[in-house]
Length: 64
Image (cartoon, rainbow, N blue to C red; front, side, top):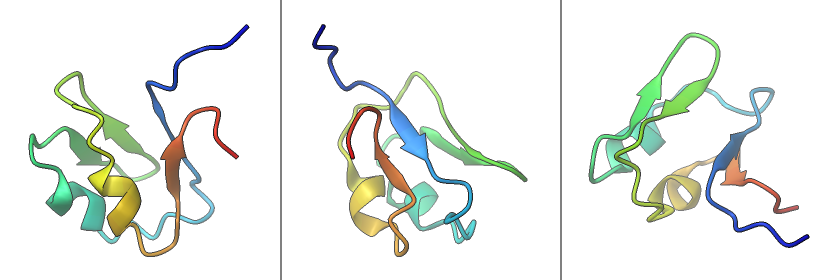
């Protein structure tokens, strides 16, 4: 079964809570909580957050 990649996975062991992804989001769809990042339904899947993360903590669900 081939599922579409339509969600992000966050590696909480890597995430430094630096906020780079939050600042890069053109639709303000990312929220920084104490433990994990959250994405709301406004996300357009532009993937800017993946590109700006300095530690590679964000990836598309299902990607390795």
